[in-house]
Image (cartoon, rainbow, N blue to C red; front, side, top):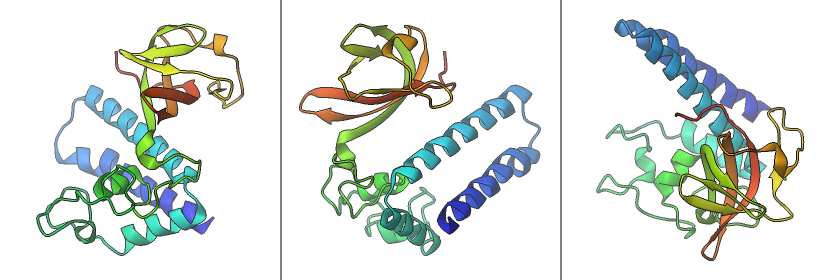
Length: 198
């Protein structure tokens, strides 16, 4: 619980700065402020979802790495202790196909191939926000990418209640999560999203 409280406090503080303090330096366009607020809320939700999927040990490692390493001399968002002397964070300590810098940005553990312990390497997992372009009995298309559904695909409504595949229609804005399997993209979870940009 302390971990979750610390993360929420950090997110609230960041939101306050970005929404209240930062815009006060210049007179913003009211539309850009609401867009900024929507983006902050979307990022907060995404960070919370990713953090929730981590094991207790993974959560602790993320918090310790962020608290203990605030130095970021090149202001790229990745702490210096995760970067090489060249200023890049191209190493992949756990050999899961995701660089340590990207793992830091994603909130996954750069020393654990499967940060959320779901049986799939971090590099094989994906999360996508988009509008359903087409659907049939075996797949959903977002943009031009086809995501396959199977008997284990979880369909949720806006309140996270289970629904059926028929709940979703072409044109719906959704958030999907899944994993790559060979050349296919397998859809694990689909839920409504309000973050689509038309």
